[in-house]
Image (cartoon, rainbow, N blue to C red; front, side, top):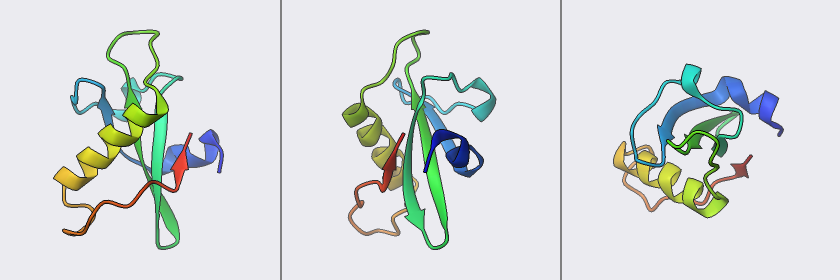
Length: 86
């Protein structure tokens, strides 16, 4: 899956200060962390609140996983590793 294919499946956006953001604010260097759920993926876009900085892969995975776990997206089970990181 590439970035263009993933864009319609962004369900949540957050910056590295853990502030929820709108997808319209997403910079081009945002990391897209995704999980395959059934037939469709679900992505969390993660970016730095500092313009021009890019969140590293491990940090993006941690932030996205923590956000979904907090929202109980994993249904009370241990969070699974993402299927995609773009």
